[in-house]
Length: 103
Image (cartoon, rainbow, N blue to C red; front, side, top):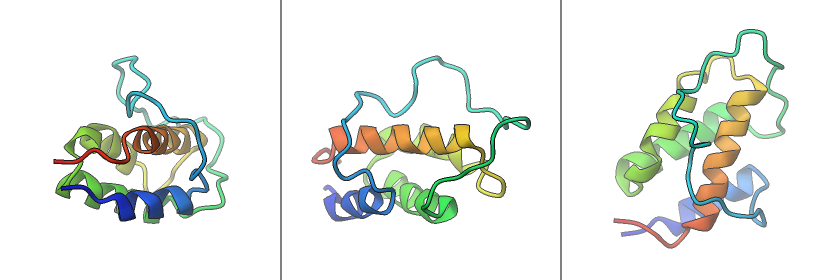
């Protein structure tokens, strides 16, 4: 079971349809995503809460491999910073790399 259409929608929304893929949805440091209180505010042209919602749906229905990274990013939906957007971009790059994977 795959949801390639939703992945394409996420990549289109974040303007990452032609991005280079990544092999993992996190940076691999093992550290959880922090609140980054002093970080730069989010500045992307896409809606952070909307993309997080799509990622949460995807994680809970057919892509449990992105669940940890998505839930870490979802904790900051109320006040995202640039570092949180970078985490979502990393998840999108992973989805680009594994677009045809599923349950």
